[in-house]
Image (cartoon, rainbow, N blue to C red; front, top):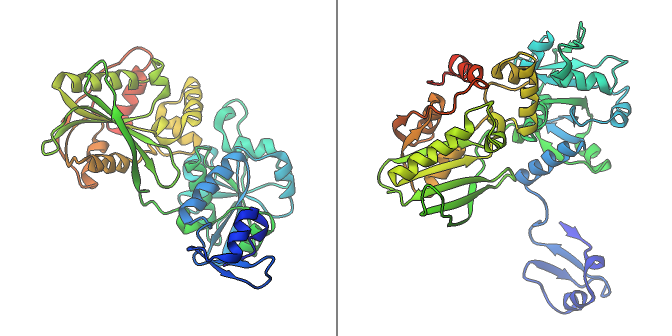
Length: 399
Protein backbone atom coordinates (compact mmCIF):
# COMPACT_ATOMS: atom_id res chain seq x y z
CA UNK A 1 0.00 0.00 0.00
CA UNK A 2 1.70 3.17 -1.22
CA UNK A 3 1.15 6.40 0.67
CA UNK A 4 2.66 9.85 0.32
CA UNK A 5 3.81 10.25 3.91
CA UNK A 6 6.16 13.12 3.16
CA UNK A 7 3.80 15.77 4.53
CA UNK A 8 3.68 13.99 7.91
CA UNK A 9 7.45 13.70 8.45
CA UNK A 10 9.60 16.08 10.46
CA UNK A 11 12.37 17.92 8.61
CA UNK A 12 15.05 15.59 10.03
CA UNK A 13 13.08 12.50 8.92
CA UNK A 14 12.66 14.02 5.46
CA UNK A 15 16.41 14.47 5.18
CA UNK A 16 16.97 10.84 6.23
CA UNK A 17 14.36 9.72 3.71
CA UNK A 18 16.36 11.26 0.88
CA UNK A 19 19.57 9.54 1.91
CA UNK A 20 18.71 6.19 3.46
CA UNK A 21 16.50 3.16 3.05
CA UNK A 22 14.38 2.54 6.16
CA UNK A 23 14.32 -1.11 7.25
CA UNK A 24 10.51 -1.14 7.17
CA UNK A 25 10.05 1.18 4.18
CA UNK A 26 10.90 1.04 0.52
CA UNK A 27 11.96 4.55 -0.56
CA UNK A 28 11.63 5.66 -4.14
CA UNK A 29 13.36 8.91 -5.09
CA UNK A 30 10.81 10.03 -7.69
CA UNK A 31 10.33 13.68 -6.90
CA UNK A 32 13.43 14.47 -4.88
CA UNK A 33 11.44 16.94 -2.78
CA UNK A 34 8.81 14.37 -1.78
CA UNK A 35 9.81 10.74 -2.34
CA UNK A 36 7.08 8.12 -2.08
CA UNK A 37 7.45 5.73 0.85
CA UNK A 38 5.80 2.35 0.41
CA UNK A 39 5.29 0.14 3.46
CA UNK A 40 6.41 -3.41 2.84
CA UNK A 41 3.55 -4.49 5.13
CA UNK A 42 0.51 -2.39 5.99
CA UNK A 43 1.42 -2.28 9.68
CA UNK A 44 -0.80 0.70 10.48
CA UNK A 45 -4.03 -0.93 9.32
CA UNK A 46 -6.17 -2.36 12.17
CA UNK A 47 -6.72 -6.11 12.05
CA UNK A 48 -10.12 -7.79 12.49
CA UNK A 49 -9.87 -7.89 16.28
CA UNK A 50 -8.92 -4.22 16.45
CA UNK A 51 -11.78 -3.29 14.14
CA UNK A 52 -14.22 -5.06 16.45
CA UNK A 53 -12.86 -3.14 19.44
CA UNK A 54 -13.28 0.09 17.48
CA UNK A 55 -16.83 -0.92 16.53
CA UNK A 56 -17.78 -1.55 20.17
CA UNK A 57 -16.38 1.83 21.20
CA UNK A 58 -18.24 3.58 18.38
CA UNK A 59 -21.54 1.95 19.30
CA UNK A 60 -21.18 2.97 22.96
CA UNK A 61 -20.71 6.57 21.84
CA UNK A 62 -23.75 6.44 19.57
CA UNK A 63 -21.73 6.36 16.34
CA UNK A 64 -23.17 3.98 13.71
CA UNK A 65 -21.09 1.20 12.20
CA UNK A 66 -21.34 -0.79 8.97
CA UNK A 67 -21.70 -4.57 9.18
CA UNK A 68 -21.12 -6.68 6.06
CA UNK A 69 -22.11 -10.27 5.38
CA UNK A 70 -20.95 -11.30 1.93
CA UNK A 71 -22.80 -9.09 -0.53
CA UNK A 72 -25.27 -7.96 2.13
CA UNK A 73 -24.55 -5.02 4.41
CA UNK A 74 -26.31 -2.82 6.91
CA UNK A 75 -25.86 0.37 8.88
CA UNK A 76 -26.13 -0.51 12.59
CA UNK A 77 -27.02 2.00 15.32
CA UNK A 78 -27.30 1.03 19.00
CA UNK A 79 -30.88 1.77 20.06
CA UNK A 80 -29.96 2.81 23.61
CA UNK A 81 -27.77 5.74 22.54
CA UNK A 82 -29.44 6.61 19.25
CA UNK A 83 -30.19 10.34 18.93
CA UNK A 84 -33.31 11.93 17.47
CA UNK A 85 -31.17 13.62 14.83
CA UNK A 86 -29.66 10.34 13.59
CA UNK A 87 -33.05 8.63 13.64
CA UNK A 88 -34.52 11.46 11.54
CA UNK A 89 -31.79 10.92 8.96
CA UNK A 90 -32.93 7.29 8.55
CA UNK A 91 -36.49 8.23 7.55
CA UNK A 92 -37.32 6.75 4.17
CA UNK A 93 -34.53 4.15 4.41
CA UNK A 94 -36.80 1.38 5.80
CA UNK A 95 -35.19 1.07 9.24
CA UNK A 96 -35.66 -2.13 11.24
CA UNK A 97 -35.29 -2.57 14.99
CA UNK A 98 -33.49 -5.81 15.88
CA UNK A 99 -34.30 -7.18 19.35
CA UNK A 100 -33.57 -10.52 21.01
CA UNK A 101 -36.15 -13.27 21.29
CA UNK A 102 -36.33 -12.64 25.05
CA UNK A 103 -37.33 -9.02 24.54
CA UNK A 104 -39.63 -10.04 21.69
CA UNK A 105 -41.48 -12.44 23.99
CA UNK A 106 -42.05 -9.63 26.48
CA UNK A 107 -43.42 -7.35 23.75
CA UNK A 108 -45.43 -10.17 22.15
CA UNK A 109 -43.52 -9.75 18.90
CA UNK A 110 -43.12 -12.66 16.50
CA UNK A 111 -39.45 -13.72 16.39
CA UNK A 112 -39.36 -15.42 12.99
CA UNK A 113 -35.58 -15.63 13.09
CA UNK A 114 -35.62 -17.71 16.27
CA UNK A 115 -33.09 -15.87 18.39
CA UNK A 116 -34.19 -12.39 17.32
CA UNK A 117 -36.99 -10.35 15.81
CA UNK A 118 -36.73 -7.69 13.12
CA UNK A 119 -39.39 -5.09 13.90
CA UNK A 120 -40.23 -2.75 11.03
CA UNK A 121 -40.42 0.81 12.33
CA UNK A 122 -43.81 2.51 11.88
CA UNK A 123 -43.67 5.67 9.78
CA UNK A 124 -44.44 7.81 12.84
CA UNK A 125 -41.88 6.13 15.11
CA UNK A 126 -39.81 8.64 17.06
CA UNK A 127 -36.85 8.28 19.39
CA UNK A 128 -39.15 7.69 22.37
CA UNK A 129 -40.74 4.74 20.54
CA UNK A 130 -37.36 3.19 19.75
CA UNK A 131 -36.11 3.53 23.30
CA UNK A 132 -39.34 2.19 24.79
CA UNK A 133 -39.08 -0.87 22.56
CA UNK A 134 -35.50 -1.45 23.71
CA UNK A 135 -35.81 -0.52 27.40
CA UNK A 136 -38.40 -2.24 29.61
CA UNK A 137 -38.34 0.43 32.32
CA UNK A 138 -41.88 1.59 31.52
CA UNK A 139 -43.35 -1.70 30.28
CA UNK A 140 -45.86 -1.82 33.12
CA UNK A 141 -46.61 1.88 33.33
CA UNK A 142 -46.92 2.51 29.58
CA UNK A 143 -46.97 -0.83 27.74
CA UNK A 144 -46.11 -0.78 24.04
CA UNK A 145 -49.16 -1.44 21.90
CA UNK A 146 -49.06 -3.57 18.77
CA UNK A 147 -49.62 -5.14 16.47
CA UNK A 148 -45.99 -4.99 15.42
CA UNK A 149 -44.94 -5.76 11.86
CA UNK A 150 -41.84 -7.93 11.68
CA UNK A 151 -39.61 -8.98 8.80
CA UNK A 152 -39.34 -12.67 8.02
CA UNK A 153 -37.63 -12.78 4.62
CA UNK A 154 -33.95 -12.54 3.83
CA UNK A 155 -30.92 -13.01 6.02
CA UNK A 156 -30.77 -11.74 9.60
CA UNK A 157 -26.99 -12.11 9.94
CA UNK A 158 -26.29 -8.37 9.99
CA UNK A 159 -28.99 -7.87 12.62
CA UNK A 160 -27.65 -10.78 14.67
CA UNK A 161 -24.14 -9.33 14.55
CA UNK A 162 -25.51 -5.93 15.57
CA UNK A 163 -27.15 -7.41 18.67
CA UNK A 164 -23.96 -9.32 19.55
CA UNK A 165 -21.93 -6.11 19.33
CA UNK A 166 -24.36 -4.10 21.46
CA UNK A 167 -24.20 -6.84 24.08
CA UNK A 168 -20.41 -6.80 23.97
CA UNK A 169 -20.56 -3.02 24.37
CA UNK A 170 -22.58 -3.46 27.60
CA UNK A 171 -25.56 -1.68 26.03
CA UNK A 172 -29.16 -2.83 25.77
CA UNK A 173 -29.26 -5.63 23.16
CA UNK A 174 -31.21 -3.76 20.50
CA UNK A 175 -30.15 -1.94 17.35
CA UNK A 176 -31.55 -0.08 14.36
CA UNK A 177 -30.46 -1.58 11.03
CA UNK A 178 -30.90 -0.25 7.51
CA UNK A 179 -29.89 -2.25 4.44
CA UNK A 180 -27.06 -0.86 2.32
CA UNK A 181 -26.37 -1.59 -1.34
CA UNK A 182 -22.64 -1.02 -0.99
CA UNK A 183 -21.52 -1.28 2.63
CA UNK A 184 -17.79 -0.71 2.09
CA UNK A 185 -18.39 2.41 -0.02
CA UNK A 186 -20.89 3.80 2.50
CA UNK A 187 -18.40 3.23 5.33
CA UNK A 188 -15.67 5.11 3.44
CA UNK A 189 -18.00 7.94 2.44
CA UNK A 190 -19.16 8.53 6.03
CA UNK A 191 -15.90 7.60 7.79
CA UNK A 192 -17.54 4.72 9.68
CA UNK A 193 -16.01 1.57 11.11
CA UNK A 194 -16.77 -1.51 9.01
CA UNK A 195 -16.77 -5.06 10.38
CA UNK A 196 -17.68 -8.49 9.08
CA UNK A 197 -20.78 -10.15 10.55
CA UNK A 198 -19.12 -13.56 10.86
CA UNK A 199 -16.20 -12.02 12.72
CA UNK A 200 -18.56 -10.24 15.12
CA UNK A 201 -20.38 -13.51 15.79
CA UNK A 202 -17.22 -15.54 16.36
CA UNK A 203 -17.44 -16.93 19.90
CA UNK A 204 -13.81 -18.04 20.14
CA UNK A 205 -12.18 -16.89 23.36
CA UNK A 206 -9.83 -13.95 22.90
CA UNK A 207 -6.25 -14.75 23.95
CA UNK A 208 -5.40 -13.54 27.44
CA UNK A 209 -1.99 -12.03 28.06
CA UNK A 210 -0.41 -11.69 31.51
CA UNK A 211 0.39 -8.03 32.14
CA UNK A 212 2.03 -7.92 35.57
CA UNK A 213 1.98 -9.62 38.95
CA UNK A 214 3.14 -8.32 42.29
CA UNK A 215 3.13 -9.28 45.95
CA UNK A 216 -0.01 -8.16 47.76
CA UNK A 217 -0.15 -8.85 51.52
CA UNK A 218 -3.77 -9.47 52.53
CA UNK A 219 -5.55 -9.73 55.84
CA UNK A 220 -6.27 -13.42 55.17
CA UNK A 221 -2.65 -14.11 54.17
CA UNK A 222 0.44 -11.96 53.98
CA UNK A 223 1.64 -14.24 51.18
CA UNK A 224 -0.65 -12.81 48.55
CA UNK A 225 0.04 -12.01 44.90
CA UNK A 226 -2.15 -10.21 42.36
CA UNK A 227 -1.97 -11.16 38.67
CA UNK A 228 -3.45 -8.99 35.89
CA UNK A 229 -4.58 -10.53 32.59
CA UNK A 230 -5.59 -8.49 29.54
CA UNK A 231 -7.60 -9.91 26.61
CA UNK A 232 -6.26 -9.11 23.17
CA UNK A 233 -9.70 -8.04 21.91
CA UNK A 234 -9.64 -4.84 23.98
CA UNK A 235 -12.09 -6.20 26.55
CA UNK A 236 -11.95 -5.68 30.28
CA UNK A 237 -9.01 -7.00 32.28
CA UNK A 238 -9.40 -9.91 34.67
CA UNK A 239 -7.56 -10.58 37.93
CA UNK A 240 -6.19 -13.59 39.79
CA UNK A 241 -5.45 -13.39 43.52
CA UNK A 242 -3.00 -16.08 44.53
CA UNK A 243 -2.99 -16.82 48.25
CA UNK A 244 0.01 -18.59 49.70
CA UNK A 245 2.07 -20.76 47.37
CA UNK A 246 -0.35 -23.28 45.86
CA UNK A 247 1.14 -26.56 44.64
CA UNK A 248 0.76 -26.62 40.84
CA UNK A 249 0.74 -30.43 40.87
CA UNK A 250 -2.20 -30.71 43.30
CA UNK A 251 -5.85 -29.60 43.08
CA UNK A 252 -5.99 -25.94 44.14
CA UNK A 253 -8.85 -24.41 46.12
CA UNK A 254 -10.36 -22.03 43.57
CA UNK A 255 -13.14 -19.47 43.40
CA UNK A 256 -14.42 -18.02 40.10
CA UNK A 257 -15.88 -14.74 41.32
CA UNK A 258 -17.67 -12.44 38.90
CA UNK A 259 -17.27 -8.71 39.44
CA UNK A 260 -19.94 -7.22 41.70
CA UNK A 261 -19.45 -3.54 42.48
CA UNK A 262 -22.55 -3.43 44.65
CA UNK A 263 -21.28 -6.44 46.59
CA UNK A 264 -18.05 -4.57 47.34
CA UNK A 265 -20.22 -1.78 48.75
CA UNK A 266 -21.88 -4.23 51.11
CA UNK A 267 -25.11 -4.67 49.16
CA UNK A 268 -27.74 -6.88 50.80
CA UNK A 269 -29.50 -7.62 47.48
CA UNK A 270 -27.08 -10.44 46.63
CA UNK A 271 -24.66 -12.80 48.35
CA UNK A 272 -21.60 -11.77 46.30
CA UNK A 273 -19.85 -9.76 49.00
CA UNK A 274 -20.08 -12.49 51.66
CA UNK A 275 -19.03 -15.10 49.07
CA UNK A 276 -15.94 -13.08 48.14
CA UNK A 277 -14.90 -12.61 51.75
CA UNK A 278 -15.82 -16.18 52.70
CA UNK A 279 -13.81 -17.68 49.85
CA UNK A 280 -10.72 -15.66 50.70
CA UNK A 281 -11.04 -16.49 54.38
CA UNK A 282 -11.22 -20.21 53.61
CA UNK A 283 -8.18 -19.98 51.33
CA UNK A 284 -6.30 -18.14 54.04
CA UNK A 285 -7.27 -20.76 56.63
CA UNK A 286 -6.08 -23.58 54.37
CA UNK A 287 -2.90 -21.69 53.51
CA UNK A 288 -3.31 -21.64 49.74
CA UNK A 289 -5.83 -20.89 46.99
CA UNK A 290 -6.61 -18.87 43.89
CA UNK A 291 -9.46 -16.40 43.57
CA UNK A 292 -10.26 -15.28 40.03
CA UNK A 293 -12.02 -11.91 39.83
CA UNK A 294 -13.64 -11.89 36.39
CA UNK A 295 -14.95 -8.56 35.09
CA UNK A 296 -18.37 -9.88 34.12
CA UNK A 297 -20.59 -7.62 36.21
CA UNK A 298 -24.25 -8.51 36.51
CA UNK A 299 -23.80 -12.06 35.17
CA UNK A 300 -22.15 -10.56 32.11
CA UNK A 301 -24.54 -7.71 31.23
CA UNK A 302 -22.59 -4.82 32.79
CA UNK A 303 -23.31 -2.59 35.77
CA UNK A 304 -25.76 -0.23 34.02
CA UNK A 305 -27.90 -3.12 32.79
CA UNK A 306 -27.62 -4.76 36.20
CA UNK A 307 -29.11 -1.62 37.74
CA UNK A 308 -31.88 -1.76 35.14
CA UNK A 309 -32.53 -5.33 36.28
CA UNK A 310 -32.62 -4.16 39.91
CA UNK A 311 -35.18 -1.54 38.95
CA UNK A 312 -37.31 -4.23 37.31
CA UNK A 313 -36.99 -6.37 40.43
CA UNK A 314 -38.41 -3.43 42.38
CA UNK A 315 -41.44 -3.75 40.08
CA UNK A 316 -41.93 -7.38 41.12
CA UNK A 317 -39.90 -9.39 38.59
CA UNK A 318 -37.34 -11.94 39.73
CA UNK A 319 -33.70 -11.82 38.60
CA UNK A 320 -34.19 -14.14 35.60
CA UNK A 321 -37.40 -12.43 34.47
CA UNK A 322 -35.66 -9.05 34.69
CA UNK A 323 -32.82 -10.26 32.47
CA UNK A 324 -35.27 -11.58 29.89
CA UNK A 325 -37.29 -8.35 29.81
CA UNK A 326 -34.04 -6.50 29.11
CA UNK A 327 -33.32 -8.88 26.25
CA UNK A 328 -30.60 -10.95 27.89
CA UNK A 329 -30.27 -14.64 28.62
CA UNK A 330 -30.33 -15.90 32.22
CA UNK A 331 -26.53 -15.74 32.36
CA UNK A 332 -24.26 -14.04 29.80
CA UNK A 333 -20.94 -14.92 31.47
CA UNK A 334 -18.08 -16.84 29.83
CA UNK A 335 -16.33 -19.11 32.32
CA UNK A 336 -13.78 -20.18 29.70
CA UNK A 337 -11.91 -17.04 30.77
CA UNK A 338 -11.38 -18.53 34.22
CA UNK A 339 -10.17 -21.82 32.79
CA UNK A 340 -7.65 -20.04 30.56
CA UNK A 341 -6.27 -17.96 33.44
CA UNK A 342 -5.86 -21.06 35.59
CA UNK A 343 -3.95 -22.79 32.80
CA UNK A 344 -1.67 -19.78 32.38
CA UNK A 345 -0.98 -19.88 36.12
CA UNK A 346 0.03 -23.53 35.79
CA UNK A 347 -3.02 -25.25 37.32
CA UNK A 348 -4.88 -28.18 35.79
CA UNK A 349 -6.86 -29.44 38.81
CA UNK A 350 -9.15 -27.45 41.09
CA UNK A 351 -11.33 -27.81 44.14
CA UNK A 352 -14.02 -25.34 43.11
CA UNK A 353 -15.71 -23.12 45.69
CA UNK A 354 -19.17 -22.71 44.19
CA UNK A 355 -22.87 -23.47 44.51
CA UNK A 356 -23.27 -23.29 40.72
CA UNK A 357 -22.99 -26.63 38.86
CA UNK A 358 -22.65 -24.73 35.57
CA UNK A 359 -19.24 -23.45 36.65
CA UNK A 360 -18.11 -27.01 37.30
CA UNK A 361 -19.35 -28.14 33.89
CA UNK A 362 -17.77 -25.20 32.05
CA UNK A 363 -14.35 -25.71 33.64
CA UNK A 364 -14.43 -29.41 32.88
CA UNK A 365 -15.50 -28.78 29.27
CA UNK A 366 -12.54 -26.40 29.01
CA UNK A 367 -10.09 -29.16 29.89
CA UNK A 368 -9.62 -28.67 33.64
CA UNK A 369 -10.27 -31.34 36.24
CA UNK A 370 -12.65 -30.42 39.05
CA UNK A 371 -11.83 -32.89 41.80
CA UNK A 372 -14.34 -31.45 44.26
CA UNK A 373 -17.16 -28.92 44.46
CA UNK A 374 -16.79 -27.07 47.75
CA UNK A 375 -20.09 -25.43 48.88
CA UNK A 376 -20.07 -21.72 49.72
CA UNK A 377 -23.34 -20.96 51.49
CA UNK A 378 -23.07 -17.54 53.10
CA UNK A 379 -24.78 -14.18 53.13
CA UNK A 380 -28.52 -14.95 53.06
CA UNK A 381 -30.70 -12.18 54.51
CA UNK A 382 -34.26 -10.89 54.20
CA UNK A 383 -33.31 -8.65 51.26
CA UNK A 384 -31.87 -11.41 49.07
CA UNK A 385 -33.87 -14.47 50.16
CA UNK A 386 -36.10 -14.32 47.05
CA UNK A 387 -33.07 -13.76 44.82
CA UNK A 388 -31.34 -16.85 46.22
CA UNK A 389 -34.53 -18.89 45.88
CA UNK A 390 -34.75 -17.90 42.20
CA UNK A 391 -31.12 -18.91 41.61
CA UNK A 392 -31.90 -22.31 43.10
CA UNK A 393 -35.20 -22.81 41.26
CA UNK A 394 -34.33 -21.39 37.83
CA UNK A 395 -30.53 -21.49 37.59
CA UNK A 396 -29.87 -24.78 39.35
CA UNK A 397 -27.75 -23.40 42.18
CA UNK A 398 -27.30 -25.83 45.05
CA UNK A 399 -28.40 -23.76 48.04
